[in-house]
Length: 77
Image (cartoon, rainbow, N blue to C red):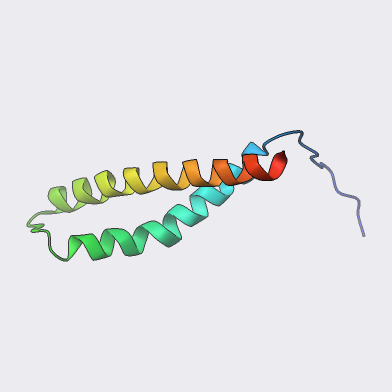
């Protein structure tokens, strides 16, 4: 078995973990939220659909990122 090339032992918050977890959770949580909110919204063109998904997705991303960072910070202390 080859040895690991690189390891990490961060002091404090592991920002790599925060970014990866934020990415995955934003997709897992955000896709159903965008789909559910789009049901009652008139989205006549592709431009309006993309704009809606970006606006809602940005809010979801910020909220998930803050929650994941808060969780990581609480674990690191």
